[in-house]
Length: 293
Figure (cartoon, rainbow, N blue to C red):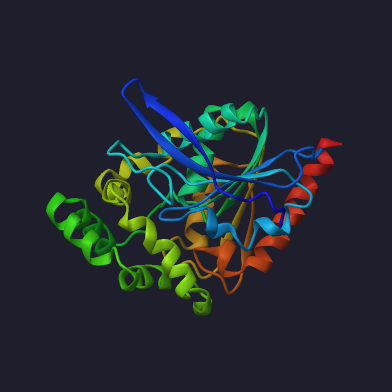
Protein backbone atom coordinates (compact mmCIF):
# COMPACT_ATOMS: atom_id res chain seq x y z
CA UNK A 1 0.00 0.00 0.00
CA UNK A 2 1.19 3.51 -0.74
CA UNK A 3 2.69 5.05 2.40
CA UNK A 4 0.68 8.29 2.14
CA UNK A 5 -2.35 6.86 3.89
CA UNK A 6 -2.58 9.09 6.95
CA UNK A 7 -5.90 10.62 7.90
CA UNK A 8 -6.80 13.88 6.23
CA UNK A 9 -9.70 16.20 7.00
CA UNK A 10 -11.81 18.83 5.33
CA UNK A 11 -14.45 21.14 6.71
CA UNK A 12 -17.77 20.78 4.91
CA UNK A 13 -20.01 23.82 5.20
CA UNK A 14 -23.52 22.35 5.43
CA UNK A 15 -25.18 25.76 5.58
CA UNK A 16 -24.37 29.25 6.80
CA UNK A 17 -24.73 28.16 10.42
CA UNK A 18 -23.23 24.67 10.47
CA UNK A 19 -20.05 22.94 9.41
CA UNK A 20 -18.76 19.42 9.91
CA UNK A 21 -15.33 17.81 9.88
CA UNK A 22 -14.98 14.96 7.35
CA UNK A 23 -12.20 12.35 7.43
CA UNK A 24 -10.68 11.01 4.21
CA UNK A 25 -7.55 9.30 2.89
CA UNK A 26 -5.63 9.34 -0.37
CA UNK A 27 -3.67 6.46 -1.90
CA UNK A 28 -1.74 5.66 -5.03
CA UNK A 29 0.17 7.65 -7.66
CA UNK A 30 -1.12 11.22 -8.14
CA UNK A 31 -0.12 11.02 -11.79
CA UNK A 32 -1.96 7.78 -12.61
CA UNK A 33 -3.34 7.94 -16.17
CA UNK A 34 -6.47 6.07 -15.13
CA UNK A 35 -9.77 7.39 -13.80
CA UNK A 36 -9.45 7.74 -9.99
CA UNK A 37 -11.49 5.60 -7.59
CA UNK A 38 -13.63 6.72 -4.67
CA UNK A 39 -14.56 4.10 -2.07
CA UNK A 40 -17.73 4.73 -0.03
CA UNK A 41 -18.47 2.50 2.97
CA UNK A 42 -21.85 1.20 4.08
CA UNK A 43 -24.06 1.79 7.12
CA UNK A 44 -22.01 1.82 10.33
CA UNK A 45 -18.79 1.48 8.34
CA UNK A 46 -15.65 3.52 7.91
CA UNK A 47 -12.55 3.80 5.72
CA UNK A 48 -10.91 0.85 7.46
CA UNK A 49 -13.60 -1.52 6.20
CA UNK A 50 -11.79 -1.32 2.83
CA UNK A 51 -8.40 -2.33 4.27
CA UNK A 52 -8.39 -5.65 2.41
CA UNK A 53 -9.33 -4.03 -0.90
CA UNK A 54 -7.54 -0.74 -1.47
CA UNK A 55 -4.00 -2.22 -1.21
CA UNK A 56 -4.75 -4.44 -4.22
CA UNK A 57 -5.18 -1.39 -6.46
CA UNK A 58 -3.18 1.54 -5.06
CA UNK A 59 -0.09 0.79 -7.12
CA UNK A 60 -2.04 1.53 -10.32
CA UNK A 61 -4.83 3.96 -9.42
CA UNK A 62 -5.25 7.19 -7.53
CA UNK A 63 -7.69 6.21 -4.79
CA UNK A 64 -9.77 8.18 -2.32
CA UNK A 65 -11.87 6.93 0.60
CA UNK A 66 -13.83 8.90 3.16
CA UNK A 67 -16.04 8.46 6.19
CA UNK A 68 -19.59 9.53 5.47
CA UNK A 69 -21.01 12.24 7.68
CA UNK A 70 -22.33 10.62 10.86
CA UNK A 71 -20.04 7.58 10.63
CA UNK A 72 -16.43 6.57 11.23
CA UNK A 73 -14.39 9.50 12.47
CA UNK A 74 -16.38 12.12 10.57
CA UNK A 75 -18.52 14.56 12.54
CA UNK A 76 -21.96 13.46 13.70
CA UNK A 77 -24.21 16.52 13.85
CA UNK A 78 -27.94 16.42 14.49
CA UNK A 79 -29.05 16.83 10.88
CA UNK A 80 -31.45 15.00 8.59
CA UNK A 81 -29.42 12.05 7.35
CA UNK A 82 -30.36 10.67 3.94
CA UNK A 83 -28.96 9.32 0.70
CA UNK A 84 -29.32 12.85 -0.64
CA UNK A 85 -27.07 14.19 2.13
CA UNK A 86 -24.43 11.55 1.37
CA UNK A 87 -24.65 12.25 -2.38
CA UNK A 88 -24.12 15.94 -1.62
CA UNK A 89 -21.05 14.99 0.45
CA UNK A 90 -19.65 13.09 -2.54
CA UNK A 91 -20.24 16.17 -4.69
CA UNK A 92 -18.48 18.41 -2.14
CA UNK A 93 -15.50 16.06 -1.95
CA UNK A 94 -15.06 15.83 -5.73
CA UNK A 95 -15.22 19.62 -5.91
CA UNK A 96 -12.59 19.87 -3.15
CA UNK A 97 -10.21 17.49 -4.97
CA UNK A 98 -11.00 18.99 -8.41
CA UNK A 99 -12.00 15.60 -9.82
CA UNK A 100 -13.90 15.79 -13.10
CA UNK A 101 -14.61 12.06 -13.36
CA UNK A 102 -14.65 9.22 -10.85
CA UNK A 103 -15.22 5.49 -10.54
CA UNK A 104 -17.43 4.99 -7.49
CA UNK A 105 -16.97 1.77 -5.51
CA UNK A 106 -19.66 1.58 -2.85
CA UNK A 107 -20.95 -0.93 -0.35
CA UNK A 108 -24.56 -1.16 0.84
CA UNK A 109 -25.74 2.33 1.86
CA UNK A 110 -22.58 3.79 0.32
CA UNK A 111 -23.46 2.11 -2.97
CA UNK A 112 -26.99 3.53 -2.81
CA UNK A 113 -25.50 6.98 -2.16
CA UNK A 114 -23.27 6.52 -5.20
CA UNK A 115 -26.25 5.62 -7.38
CA UNK A 116 -28.08 8.76 -6.32
CA UNK A 117 -24.99 10.87 -6.96
CA UNK A 118 -24.63 9.33 -10.42
CA UNK A 119 -28.32 10.00 -11.12
CA UNK A 120 -27.88 13.66 -10.20
CA UNK A 121 -24.44 14.03 -11.86
CA UNK A 122 -24.29 11.43 -14.65
CA UNK A 123 -21.44 13.18 -16.48
CA UNK A 124 -19.18 12.96 -13.40
CA UNK A 125 -19.22 9.15 -13.03
CA UNK A 126 -17.14 6.88 -15.26
CA UNK A 127 -18.46 3.67 -13.67
CA UNK A 128 -20.41 2.39 -10.68
CA UNK A 129 -19.24 -0.71 -8.82
CA UNK A 130 -21.99 -1.65 -6.37
CA UNK A 131 -21.33 -4.19 -3.62
CA UNK A 132 -24.59 -5.48 -2.14
CA UNK A 133 -26.28 -2.08 -2.51
CA UNK A 134 -29.22 -1.07 -0.36
CA UNK A 135 -32.06 1.27 -1.30
CA UNK A 136 -34.34 -1.15 -3.14
CA UNK A 137 -35.94 -4.02 -1.26
CA UNK A 138 -38.89 -5.36 -3.24
CA UNK A 139 -40.80 -7.69 -0.95
CA UNK A 140 -37.73 -9.04 0.80
CA UNK A 141 -38.49 -7.47 4.19
CA UNK A 142 -40.80 -9.71 6.20
CA UNK A 143 -43.42 -8.60 8.72
CA UNK A 144 -41.19 -9.13 11.73
CA UNK A 145 -38.44 -6.98 10.23
CA UNK A 146 -40.90 -4.19 9.45
CA UNK A 147 -42.25 -4.35 13.00
CA UNK A 148 -38.72 -4.16 14.40
CA UNK A 149 -37.87 -1.10 12.31
CA UNK A 150 -41.09 0.47 13.49
CA UNK A 151 -40.04 -0.01 17.10
CA UNK A 152 -36.54 1.32 16.51
CA UNK A 153 -38.07 4.34 14.83
CA UNK A 154 -39.99 5.36 17.95
CA UNK A 155 -37.89 7.86 19.93
CA UNK A 156 -37.86 6.21 23.36
CA UNK A 157 -37.51 2.59 22.27
CA UNK A 158 -34.99 3.53 19.57
CA UNK A 159 -32.76 5.26 22.11
CA UNK A 160 -33.02 2.29 24.46
CA UNK A 161 -32.06 -0.15 21.70
CA UNK A 162 -29.19 2.09 20.62
CA UNK A 163 -27.84 2.09 24.18
CA UNK A 164 -28.17 -1.70 24.33
CA UNK A 165 -26.31 -2.31 21.06
CA UNK A 166 -23.74 0.52 21.17
CA UNK A 167 -21.07 -1.69 22.72
CA UNK A 168 -18.71 -4.46 21.52
CA UNK A 169 -21.17 -7.24 22.40
CA UNK A 170 -24.02 -5.57 20.55
CA UNK A 171 -21.79 -4.76 17.59
CA UNK A 172 -20.61 -8.38 17.41
CA UNK A 173 -24.23 -9.58 17.35
CA UNK A 174 -25.04 -7.09 14.59
CA UNK A 175 -22.02 -7.94 12.42
CA UNK A 176 -22.23 -11.72 12.68
CA UNK A 177 -25.27 -12.14 10.34
CA UNK A 178 -23.57 -9.99 7.69
CA UNK A 179 -20.62 -12.39 7.31
CA UNK A 180 -20.40 -15.92 5.95
CA UNK A 181 -16.79 -16.26 7.10
CA UNK A 182 -17.26 -15.85 10.83
CA UNK A 183 -13.49 -15.67 11.44
CA UNK A 184 -13.61 -12.23 9.86
CA UNK A 185 -15.74 -10.95 12.75
CA UNK A 186 -12.71 -10.64 15.00
CA UNK A 187 -11.82 -8.24 17.79
CA UNK A 188 -10.22 -5.76 15.39
CA UNK A 189 -13.39 -5.52 13.27
CA UNK A 190 -15.66 -5.30 16.32
CA UNK A 191 -13.55 -2.49 17.78
CA UNK A 192 -13.54 -0.63 14.45
CA UNK A 193 -17.33 -0.64 14.39
CA UNK A 194 -17.72 0.00 18.13
CA UNK A 195 -15.57 3.11 18.49
CA UNK A 196 -17.71 5.51 16.40
CA UNK A 197 -20.78 4.56 18.44
CA UNK A 198 -19.23 6.30 21.44
CA UNK A 199 -18.99 9.63 19.64
CA UNK A 200 -21.24 12.49 20.53
CA UNK A 201 -24.18 12.57 18.13
CA UNK A 202 -23.82 8.99 16.90
CA UNK A 203 -27.40 8.24 17.88
CA UNK A 204 -28.68 10.70 15.25
CA UNK A 205 -26.95 9.04 12.29
CA UNK A 206 -27.28 5.43 13.41
CA UNK A 207 -31.01 5.60 14.09
CA UNK A 208 -31.87 7.72 11.05
CA UNK A 209 -32.54 4.85 8.56
CA UNK A 210 -35.14 3.35 10.90
CA UNK A 211 -36.69 6.69 11.86
CA UNK A 212 -36.97 7.98 8.28
CA UNK A 213 -36.58 4.92 6.04
CA UNK A 214 -37.92 6.72 2.96
CA UNK A 215 -34.86 8.99 3.06
CA UNK A 216 -32.74 5.92 2.28
CA UNK A 217 -34.70 4.54 -0.68
CA UNK A 218 -34.02 4.85 -4.40
CA UNK A 219 -37.56 4.28 -5.69
CA UNK A 220 -38.02 7.94 -6.56
CA UNK A 221 -35.21 8.06 -9.16
CA UNK A 222 -36.74 5.63 -11.66
CA UNK A 223 -35.90 6.04 -14.46
CA UNK A 224 -32.29 6.64 -13.48
CA UNK A 225 -30.50 9.34 -15.48
CA UNK A 226 -27.15 7.55 -15.18
CA UNK A 227 -26.60 5.42 -18.29
CA UNK A 228 -22.91 4.63 -17.91
CA UNK A 229 -21.12 1.44 -16.90
CA UNK A 230 -22.44 -0.26 -13.78
CA UNK A 231 -21.79 -3.57 -12.05
CA UNK A 232 -23.49 -5.36 -9.18
CA UNK A 233 -21.33 -7.65 -7.03
CA UNK A 234 -23.34 -9.70 -4.55
CA UNK A 235 -22.70 -12.19 -1.77
CA UNK A 236 -24.74 -15.33 -2.43
CA UNK A 237 -25.46 -15.80 1.28
CA UNK A 238 -26.82 -12.30 1.98
CA UNK A 239 -30.01 -13.13 3.86
CA UNK A 240 -30.95 -9.49 4.49
CA UNK A 241 -30.72 -8.56 0.79
CA UNK A 242 -31.00 -11.89 -1.04
CA UNK A 243 -29.56 -11.58 -4.55
CA UNK A 244 -32.32 -13.54 -6.31
CA UNK A 245 -34.86 -10.97 -5.05
CA UNK A 246 -32.87 -7.76 -5.05
CA UNK A 247 -30.70 -7.94 -8.18
CA UNK A 248 -33.76 -7.79 -10.49
CA UNK A 249 -34.87 -4.65 -8.62
CA UNK A 250 -31.54 -2.95 -9.32
CA UNK A 251 -31.49 -4.07 -12.93
CA UNK A 252 -34.81 -2.31 -13.40
CA UNK A 253 -33.17 0.85 -12.07
CA UNK A 254 -29.90 0.25 -13.97
CA UNK A 255 -30.72 -1.98 -16.97
CA UNK A 256 -27.11 -1.76 -18.17
CA UNK A 257 -25.74 -3.25 -14.93
CA UNK A 258 -24.07 -6.63 -15.07
CA UNK A 259 -24.40 -8.86 -12.00
CA UNK A 260 -21.87 -11.19 -10.45
CA UNK A 261 -22.65 -13.38 -7.45
CA UNK A 262 -19.82 -14.54 -5.21
CA UNK A 263 -20.43 -17.81 -3.35
CA UNK A 264 -19.62 -18.26 0.34
CA UNK A 265 -20.06 -14.54 1.04
CA UNK A 266 -22.72 -12.51 2.77
CA UNK A 267 -23.62 -8.82 2.96
CA UNK A 268 -20.15 -7.41 3.72
CA UNK A 269 -18.85 -9.09 0.58
CA UNK A 270 -15.79 -6.88 0.03
CA UNK A 271 -14.36 -7.92 3.41
CA UNK A 272 -16.06 -11.29 3.85
CA UNK A 273 -14.60 -12.65 0.58
CA UNK A 274 -12.03 -9.99 -0.22
CA UNK A 275 -9.92 -12.05 -2.63
CA UNK A 276 -12.89 -12.95 -4.83
CA UNK A 277 -14.20 -9.39 -4.62
CA UNK A 278 -10.81 -7.91 -5.55
CA UNK A 279 -10.52 -10.30 -8.49
CA UNK A 280 -13.89 -9.20 -9.86
CA UNK A 281 -13.12 -5.53 -9.22
CA UNK A 282 -9.80 -5.91 -11.05
CA UNK A 283 -11.64 -7.42 -14.03
CA UNK A 284 -14.10 -4.51 -14.04
CA UNK A 285 -11.42 -1.84 -13.75
CA UNK A 286 -9.39 -3.29 -16.60
CA UNK A 287 -12.49 -3.20 -18.80
CA UNK A 288 -12.99 0.45 -17.86
CA UNK A 289 -9.31 1.15 -18.54
CA UNK A 290 -9.66 -0.20 -22.07
CA UNK A 291 -12.53 2.18 -22.70
CA UNK A 292 -10.17 5.04 -21.69
CA UNK A 293 -7.67 4.08 -24.40
